[in-house]
Amino acid sequence: MKGLEVITPAHAKAWRAVLDRTGGYDVYHLPEYHALAEAMGEGTAYLFAYQEGDFTIALPLLLRAVDRVSGLESAGAGWFDATSVYGYAGPACSHNAIPASVVERFQAALRTALRDRRVVGVFSRLHPLLEQAAPLAGLGEHAVLWQTVSIDLTLPPEAQFARYRKNHREGIGKLVRKGLTVVHDTTWRYADVFQKIYHETMRRVGASPAYFFPPEYFARLRELLAGHVHLFAVLLEDRPICAALMFENQGIVQYHLSGTCDTARKLSPVKLLLDGVRQWGNGRGKRFFHLGGGMTPKPDDPLLHFKMGFSDRAHDFAVWRWIIMPDAYRDLCAVKHNWNAAQGLCSTTNDYFPLYRGSAAPRVGASGAADPVALMPARELTEAHSPAIRAPTRRRWRRLTRASRSRPWASRSTTKPCLPCAASTGSGCWFPSMIWS
Image 1 (cartoon, rainbow, N blue to C red):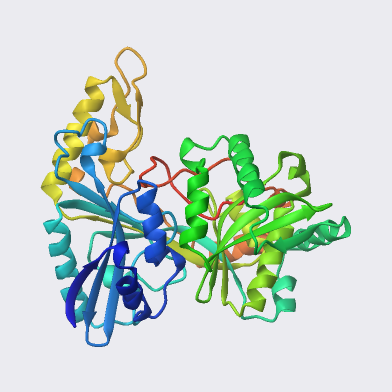
Image 2 (image 1 turned 30 degrees about the vertical axis):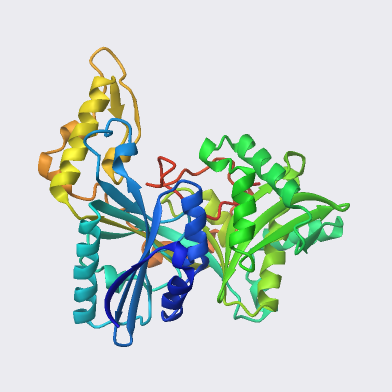
């Protein structure tokens, strides 16, 4: 086989066969996970699979109708944009080093396939643990935003625990002495309790409605990802006070969703939960326990600092933005800007991609607030608008890593939600693997 094949989740066997030809992939690449995204109304899923000789590049995407954006019901008719699923996706490749000629032909085939489907642009969160830069080189903007954290499960278990920050080790010890235990709920006995705890946590932190997943979501997640999704709970006197859903695929354990009872917040049982999952991953022979990142690009972000208390191994978290049809993109942005103005609204950001999906708010004052789009030359509307956010230098990162072991506020988990970045649900910058305390 040579060329590009486009596969839907309905052909799961063919989708999986392509993934198996790659050097590694995560649960976020699976056809079942994309089928769940479709069922939740996030878009129409496709796997763009390119094969040439021994080289395979597989890129999963969700296509969304632009005419469902307020103000673009007419101008957006027949147009689509692409995004990634909730999580870390991006291309899965058979080799870390792919010949430039193969990459060039893949990109040409992908461009043609997306243009044929009238896709204006692509946004995708990339996977911090996989090598993905090569097949995307030269296509739009590939920007490293910040860091995520993982625990190296290939180290001896004692060495893993020894790398915890002192207050994490002491906190876990106190929880054990209080009689708290971690259980892997293989029978899903606590599934309903988890949903209650999770929603209780979302209400406490003021999360957007998009985070209040309905019961159907959890039921489909368990059904479609059987063998890949696991429920863990922290028990106090046989009563769950903290619980989490974890993903497992190949050598990777991913932290998906969690919550803690309001009455148990001060105990910070999530420390014990994460330590229990780490030990479970060791027993399964896994290589990574990926905790995710912080809530902001700042290297001293409190949530990032909390996670670094379990490990100082950091990974780049990057996003990919690609405008395929500049003229159509510019026109859509202009129509959306004019619609906002007619509604008395003002764009709240000029660094959202795609810009026409960005949030807007009522104008302030008699003259109205300056709309960032109105200040931009037309040619700049064809570019990826998010300015490059510089990752910390290696020297700065090492300094922060050393400092993270002594800052007293680090043990506090965040109590503010992080919203999806260019996802179908709305606005802001999104980080999976939130730790809710």
